[in-house]
Length: 259
Image 1 (tube, rainbow, N blue to C red):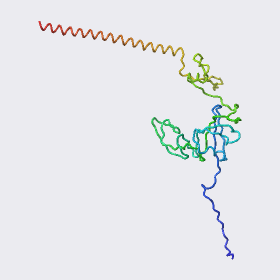
Image 2 (spheres, helix red, strand yellow):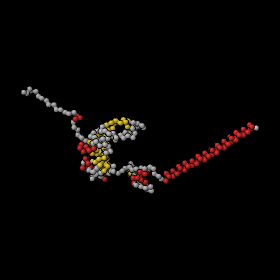
Image 3 (cartoon, one colour):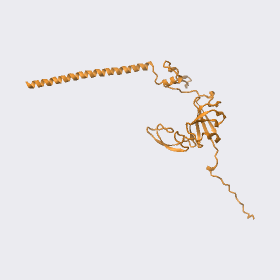
Image 4 (cartoon, rainbow, N blue to C red):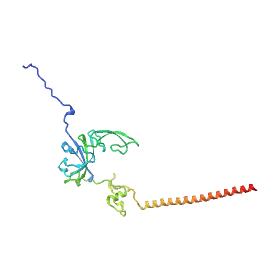
């Protein structure tokens, strides 16, 4: 029978780590030909599963991201986990490791000469713990992606090569062509309203002045060589003369003793 006491129902509440969190990952896609980047947020994990267990520098199709990416090929170029630690090429794990890094290593910039530092980096294998995944378009597909591959959103190259041979290589020039006409320049508006043109100084540019300096340098070197030879000959002649005089004095002393 009923005892008259009210029974209280205690609902079980799972711990916070056991609760299902909403999945979200940002994908930063860049296209070097137009200089554009596009950041998309993906909430559906099924779209990202083809990227899992792939390493950095792996090239694959991007069709799983949607119909607009049909025919596109992308290369995995890096990423960050949810705590902001960057992916490092060559670290074959999905977790974080602490590595002793020095000058020349990625994910580290030394502040002093010879400085080394132990830093946390994430492995190069893609997993669901990433917050941002960086992709690079290597081949375009059937349709253009607005804001990335379309010509309307293309960013003009602000800077170009500075070295003379690199400019020749970019524009397929010959030795006879004037490199100075092809260096990239840009218009800059000053505070007073005037517009000026800025262009870099071309490195390793061979001009008549540089050739004249080289000739002068070579002539000075040759003159120094001739001068050294003449001085050496004069010294040898003087040395021979002094030796002969010393020999003569020695022989005259010997003859005076005999007498």
